[in-house]
Image (cartoon, rainbow over all chains, first blue to last red; front, side, top):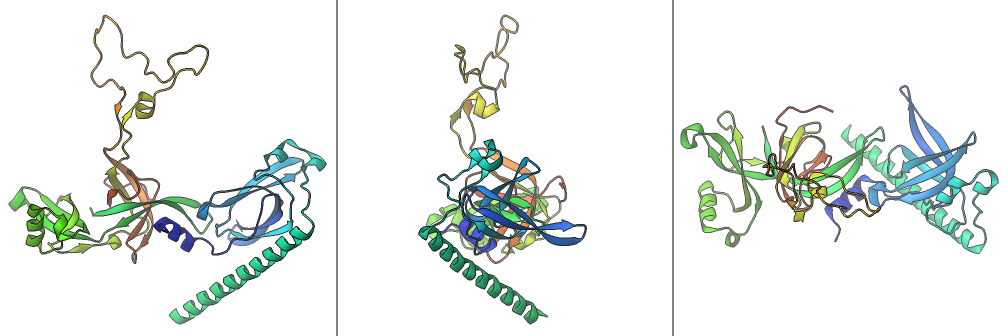
Length: 151
Length: 212
């Protein structure tokens, strides 16, 4: 049985979330406001945690800025998070990469996932992304149509 | 002052346009039917009595069935009264729905809090616990409950262990974040008393409340 809360979260959240896994090096496209202008800022780093379910699902991205570790949490359903693209797939063996916090320099790198399985994953993600974009486009078209109808 | 009866449906969160996350409790509120109007002349005070949630005839007691028949409404599961300062503008049979509230309204929500049974002083009154180690034996004990020969007794109202919860509680000044008229849903910011599925009364805030 789907509860009311579940269905509400499904309605209010995004229909498709970008395929992201722990260990991936990602670019988060985050909408920021500068004065009265809005622009997309990129936050590039490693996903060290995925937490929450439903509309609360969020990722924590870690990067090193001027020798200092910076972690930011991004709620994936937030309207401010425009997109999360995977630049590099990480080969990791745990769901939370907190051990990276204790490491500096070269040791902070996560090895890239390569080989046949990685290729298959990549293809699947690409297919999913295409579907996601199609859904987004359909939604945008519907919204435009709706506005036109009202106007 | 407006009253609406509803059921708590659980908590979730909504995003504002600027990305702020707002924790909300979803209340399935109304529609409520006015089952009786009390006036200064007839009852000595002004009030409206609201009925909420239909119930089959067989489930209503005989006296209640008579009461509902008099008002010419189908039997309801819950009846609650709201006192009014002036004589009521509503009449018997009027329906009140979620549209009495709009985004930004500030409400008080009353419900029956979750029962916790016989609870110790830590849970019930927020007392501090003793040391876990170093030979301490007073881990979750209440400690001293008073002095000795003077006064020679324990003061009335001394906070002790006992039954906790399952009492009427009101959470005040909660802004309404969203109203879904199609499904009679109110999205109230923050948490409200009681379990999911429990009956709650939503009314305009008594103290005016902060606007936000």
